Length: 324
Image (tube, rainbow, N blue to C red; front, side, top):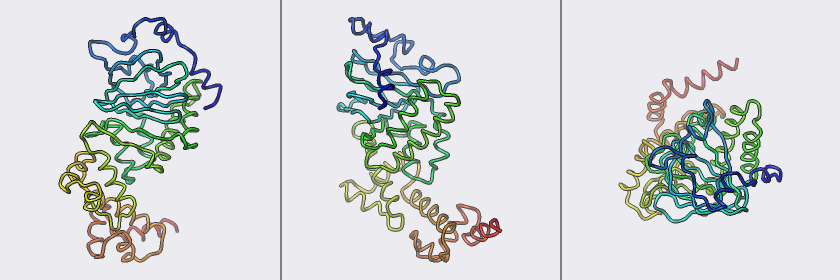
C-alpha cells in the first residue's frame, strides 16, 4: 500500500489511545440498546452510501453484527476473526473479507502493526456494480445476490487476494478517495467497486465462500463453476459424486442459495451463451444450439422464444437491420 496512506491509517486514534491506557470499549460509539448490532446511522453521515474507518486496535472486539455490508481490507499485519460459531479466520495483508448483514463475528486484539480498514457500505451502493457485472454471470449472481440480500446461507466471503495487483490498486484508490473526500467520489467508487468485483469473479479460486457451520455453500459454488466451465455438458451428478454428497441434498442447497434449480441456472447460461454466439458469429442457428448443449433445434427455438420473446433467427435479423 502507498506509504502516505498507510501512515495515515496507522495513526493511533483518541479511541485507541484510551483502549491502550486500559479503558473498556465504549459500545455507545457503535450501537444503541442492549444488543451489539453496529448501526449505519452511527457510522455514516446522512446521505452517504459508503465510508471507511480504520479498524480499532488494542482491544478484543466482542461479537457483533451490522445493519450494513462490511468489507475489511488488511493493509499491514493481520487480523483474526471468529465468524458465527466457526474456527478463527486469519486475514493477511492484501486480503479482503466481505460480511453480509446477517453475519456476526468477533475480532481478536490487533496490535500497532496490524493496520486494517473497514468499508461501511449500504446495500444500494452495489446497484451500479450489479448492472455492470450482470446476472447472466452465475458466479456474480450468486455472490452479489448474497451480499445484497443476505442470501439463504452465506455469511461471508474471504478473498485471498494478496497477490492480485489489480485488486490492490482498486482498493487503494477507494481508500484514497474516501480519505480525501474526492469530488464525485460516490460515482467513481461505484465504478471502482464494479471493477473490483469483476476482478474477483475472474479469480474464483481466490474466493472462499462460507456459511454457518454445517451448511454447504462451497458445494453450491462448485456447482456454479461446473456451469461456467462447460455449459454444454455440465452435470450436477458429477459434482455430487466428486464431493461425495447425494444429488437431492446438493439440489436443495442450490435452490435454497440461488432461488433456482440447477437445471434453470444451466438453461439460463446456455441461452445467454447462445445469444452471444448469435450476436458475434455467423454460425447457423442449428450449430449455435448444438454448441451450447441442445441437440434438438426445435426445442432450442421454443425455449429461446419463451425466454426472450423472439426466435433466434428474428434476433439475428434484428441485429442485421439495426446495423444498416
